[in-house]
Amino acid sequence: MMRRLFILFTVVLFSSCSTFKVRVYYDERFEFENFKSFCWMSGCEFNIEGPSYLAGDTSIVHSFMREIKSQLQDKGFTYNDETPDFLINLHVVAFEKEVGGYTPYHIYGQENDFTPFLAEESYQYLEGSLIIDIANYKTSTVVWRSDVIGYTDSGKVFSEKTIRHVISKALRQFPPD
Image 1 (cartoon, rainbow, N blue to C red):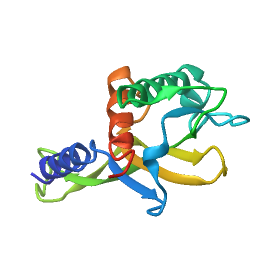
Image 2: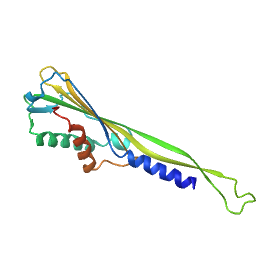
Image 3: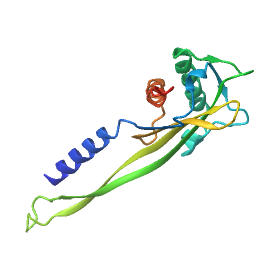
Image 4: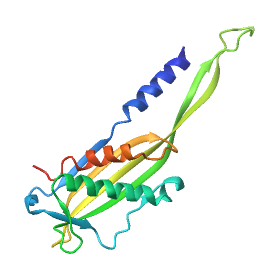
């Protein structure tokens, strides 16, 4: 019974964590309506900090960049690497985590059937954060930031669908109203 409750609790916990938490910060005095074109921040190396199977995979970074570019163009912004109005910086940080506990079970046929034994169970997952900074090209100051925090199965590679979903959530409030 306790084992079933533990498994049910774990499933509910991690299914509720499959959503992403988004935080957006921006300069409320800044006039975003002047932004028409964008470019990647020069000198910035977009990278992933985390487990080797993610950090060593440059295709994930390129997928994030491609999706950011696509979604900004869908919002009416144009890519211009000569004279952009704003610059974009991208950073991904991920950590492998583990949660576990003990669940009681009984061995059939013992003298005392009520003596519980404990079985250790654990679940590995990946906790990550995607940070998108948008800086004013003229002043080189960050005027908008989105921080997306989420959880996924450990060892799972990001699919294009997941990347599209995360970037959509990250850029949903850009430009601010």
